[in-house]
Amino acid sequence: MRAYLEGGKKLTIIVLACNRPEYLTRTLNSLMMDVRGVRTEDVLVVQDGKHAETQKVIEDFGLNFVQNTGGTNLRRGAVNDGAARIATHYKFAFGKGFEHNPASPAVIVLEDDFLFSPDFLEYFENNGPVLEEDPTTFIMSAWNDNGNEVHVKDRNKLLRTDYFPGLGWMMPRALWSELGASWPSTHWDHWMRDPLRHKGRSCVFPEVPRSYHIGVKGTFMDDFHHKAYFADIGYNKDENFNWRGDEWRGAVKEAYDRDLKEGIYGAKELGSLADFENSSGERGGYMGVHGFWWKNDNYVYIINEGEPGQFKGGRTGKLWAVSEFR
Image 1 (cartoon, rainbow, N blue to C red):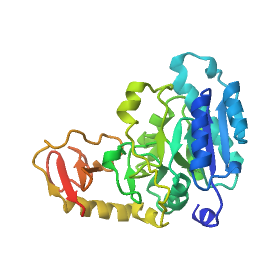
Image 2 (cartoon, rainbow, N blue to C red; image 1 turned 30 degrees about the vertical axis):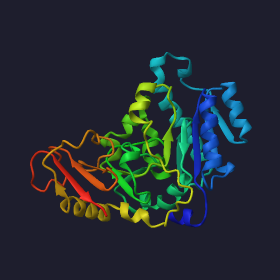
Image 3 (cartoon, rainbow, N blue to C red; image 1 turned 120 degrees about the horizontal axis):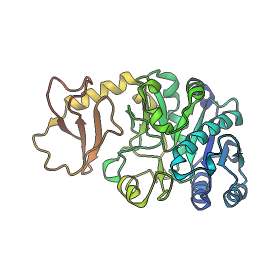
Image 4 (cartoon, rainbow, N blue to C red; image 1 turned 90 degrees about the vertical axis):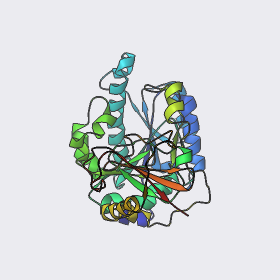
């Protein structure tokens, strides 16, 4: 992958769509107009079914597309078949995506209800080599589950998590060869989080997200859940930001664990939780550790009680620590 990307070649981008032309229009506008470096020939829209208005949107953008019309007939099923329809379509889309450019060492997979940062593609191009250089990595995502605007700040920083985040992510061709034959018939994202799949490998993601989820209505989405978990995500909007190209080295396990350990052991332990109205959840954690910015100038580590990771330092219970950055 590193040689491919350093040679200036482009990764295939697949956009999964079905029957939401309004969302798809916003997604493609953002992808094709807001994101630097995206070429029409590298984008493949994979439509589930033949919804005419959605197809017209794709054609109006002049993009390559393929329609998933065969197989399970799940598209005519009940609402509770949604997870099965989505899983089936993902498998179809990956197959077509890797066929689109047989030389592409990975595909970037998107859904039809995203917005993107200006450096969305550059994020993958600059940092994708970590998946090749570090065998303890699994996939790379543009999303941070805990990326609320008040808790993120460092646009260059990459993080690791044991919890598959999705929402704009990169599937390496080698990993598809490993997983494709056993791809599930339902709830593909939960399946990806199973230790039988990730085998202890970590997902890499940015502290400041590079994608934003706009879909208020969907198979598993409504206004309440969008407001609670997605509306306040602080994705990068700085058009002047550029990656140096070496940030991925800090996400390699040896360097990442060293820096994380130094940050935790150099932090001040708190005796009270009174100042913390919110905390990170299971999502985004790495070896039982969660980190986020608090009140702009304090970086907070939370270590889960009972976690077997190496960062408990012999303490019992939960460790709440603040490391001040000046």
